[in-house]
Image (cartoon, rainbow, N blue to C red):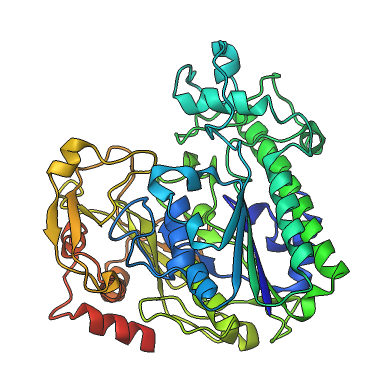
Length: 511
């Protein structure tokens, strides 16, 4: 048995034809839906990019305990477990965050890996010469000019000078390497290949052949990089950025087609699992916002596409309605290869859903560290925001103190205290770092939405009885995740009475 995972970053389901999108050409995603089971009710878990990838490795939420961070010594890693069982694991990616301080332990869990450099502000191409402000800034930002915003913007401009053709683009080269691995290893058994591209993550940079598919009025600037900021009401900019995103999605679609072609050519469908997934979506003007992370995790960002082909089940061209999440991918792959599922994994194999649309769970958590803790059953979503205490108390728990792109400062390191083990730390105490109130995450009011009547989430409900019914479900889900005690305080939630977190986790896995 073999398995291939095609992972995109920031793939919005509303732009895809098999999910009802009508303004983006995605014939290969339509073709994919005809060859796989398409999941209609898939949600994110821990946000954003690397927290989601931690879930792909560990099969459990992490956003209640820390922000962006590396895999730790106590973390179970699905590809590492497969490798120990004699299944070759290979990663090929242009997702440059793997190189950073806060995520440098992920790629080493695979037996082999290949990196393609140059996406976004990846610090790979050296240029010591001058870079004019107008060239550096005109492709990023909105109403406010972003000259000198950060070094990443300058580096992105330098990187773009290297990508003058379709063949030179990082996404193309990533699929080239991934397809080369599949072709070379098609005669062999027992391998897992993860082909992961940073696209269609912003900036929405691609070649003109894709941009010309979406003609629109624009003033001629190269703006294709929205900041994480409020939409300023500029309708021309809105349409331009959406067209740039559509162009990049169509490029993603074309490379997906190359994978499907190779599976047809080599007749891999008979014994090779195929998973096509993403980490999250993105706001392109909806709710008067650009981006993610700063604002609530609305459906546009939290409700994500997923397709799975399992040759043992043979189900294709069908839709599945069961509530599933990113945490289910690790146990799905372990079960496919006949490997035991670690007790700490909260996710569950998708095979029962593929076979008969059997439900896996009644509700699901999702969120970002220090933001809303969200609960959904697929019909409604409850976004619990902090109470009147200024988003306090709040601690990060880790044994590997790193931020996204830097180490912890000396001042931070001086302020940690020891905290006892959590369920997932396997008896290891951890370092607790106090976190102040963030001005980055905004709009944290508690909200309740009826997704069946208001999928666009334009009219939050004010139903105290319904909220009172959901709160125990949210608290139980947090307890099953061994949430730190201060999370209940921060959110002004009742702590679970006499809750034994290990027992709660066992009970959650049993239901």
